[in-house]
Amino acid sequence: MPNDGRWAAALPDLLNDFSALLRDALHLMRDLGGVDSCSD
Image (cartoon, rainbow, N blue to C red; front, side):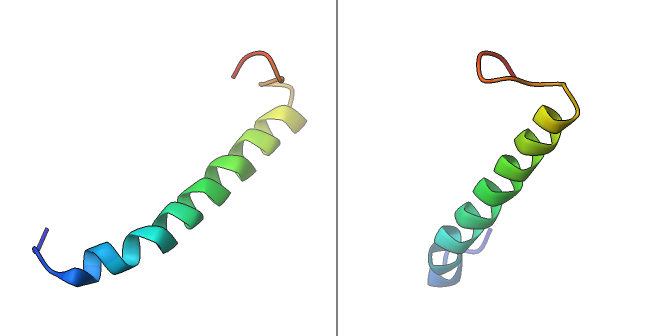
C-alpha cells in the first residue's frame, strides 16, 4: 500500500461498507436458519 493520505481518508468509508455487508450477511444467515442471537 502506498504511504499516502488517500488510504487513511478512505478507511472510514470502507469500514462502513464492510460493516453493512457483514450485517447483511448475518441477517441473511438468520433468515436462512444458519445463525441466531447466541451463535454465528
